[in-house]
Amino acid sequence: MKVGIIGLGAMGMGMALNLSKKNQLSSFWNRSKEPAQELSNTTGLTAANSPAEVASQSELIIICVSRDADVLEVVNAMLSGIKEGTIVLDTSTVSSNTAKEVSDILKTVGARFLDGPVSGGVEGAKNGTMAMMIGGNEVDLEKIRSCLEIITGNIVYIGPTGSGQATKAVNQIMVAGINQAVTEALAFGQAMDLDMDKVIDVVGSGAAANWFLDHRGKTMLKNEFKNGFKVALHHKDLSICQDMAKNNSGVDLPTVEMTLDNYQELIKQGYGEEDISSLFRIKKSTQKT
Image (cartoon, rainbow, N blue to C red; front, side, top):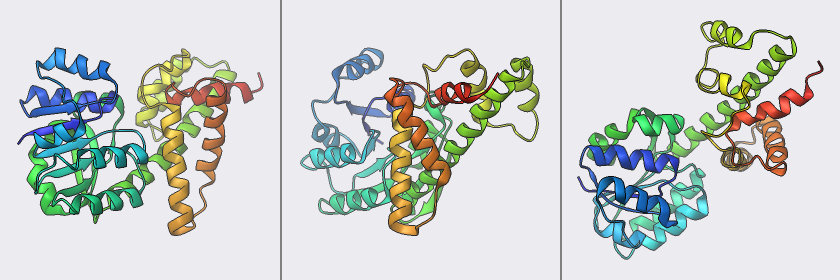
């Protein structure tokens, strides 16, 4: 299957490289030229000049961009090149309503749509071990499953269009809670003058074990926040969760509200591009030593 990718950030680049290794990548485009050139140098493929050009060369188009407006812009830009029967998979994190809107747009040109947000961090994208939650037509999923197995470790069909994004909202809310708990606990342990490497090792082998502690615990203790999931992006995702709760369920999300406030403070201080483990900066400042 000819696969095109639009969006070569940390996640999109990882997916593109894994597809290229299996000779599945046929075309790609990125708004800024540097990542596209980097991928061209690595794969020997020439970057497309537009989303429409990617669409014209692909049977499966994977979108991986940052925001709802970006997804809609890309989809509208590729309409002139897309062929009937093409499957478009959006791995971005956007609202369920945006997923449904994109599906309706693509139906006008006979294309199919799946919302397939992912979880697993930059490491997961690089290693092809991400979890993917799919909304849309399950028949369409089965048509592209073999390609998705190159870039993911776990593919779960959730339900109709928008279900994948709703499930990703669940994931992002849970990540916020884990981030709050881990950063607060480690700041407390540090204030107690404990050997924190030993603390992480023992706590990480018991009931409190989790991915975030394992992958970010020791780096945050060193004040290293360079790689991973950016504060500004999680702030965007949690804002989407907040809007979905207000518009669809009315559920209260106090952890989300607290995390948004914390992230806004980090962004104000110039840390918006750091990994979300930089929440540790705030937790340390609130501990009395």
